[in-house]
Image 1 (cartoon, rainbow, N blue to C red):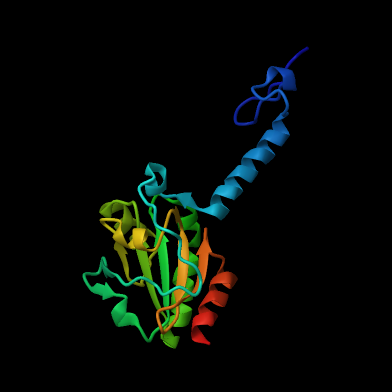
Image 2 (spheres, rainbow, N blue to C red; image 1 turned 180 degrees about the vertical axis):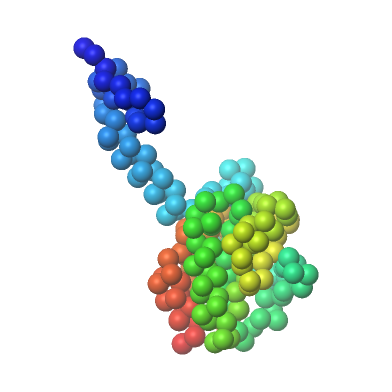
Length: 198
């Protein structure tokens, strides 16, 4: 029985019993690869802390009071969550090496420009990242809201972050009203923000 080959960048076709996966032909393998990629994008990136099993922190839920923190932003200012009480806060955890974080970057910037006039504060927290990588990410996606590096992992640990991206919306009283793991769609983010504005 002969194999059928096509030259250049076209996938080789083989009889299933001769392929690496005897139960799959080429087209189902392409479909399987696409499904796996989609699941990675939807679910987000696993942080290095989870891989090392360093955190035993329980996850926060909607209705919980958000832990207080202070973040040194890349623009030089120090941002304290306590000082932001009274204003809704969109808090996004991300990393430059995380592909879903790249997918949602423009969505967050667009939402920031839409809601900043309504008193909503946006803050990005880079976790498990390098300073140079995080700064390059902010520059590449032209993020104009404050972002900073969680150098010691304290903020991520206090928030129970083990996979990124993760986006939270915190209301004026400091209570979490919205949580989303994975790249956040624009309509879902808008709905989450509206909960803090009610």
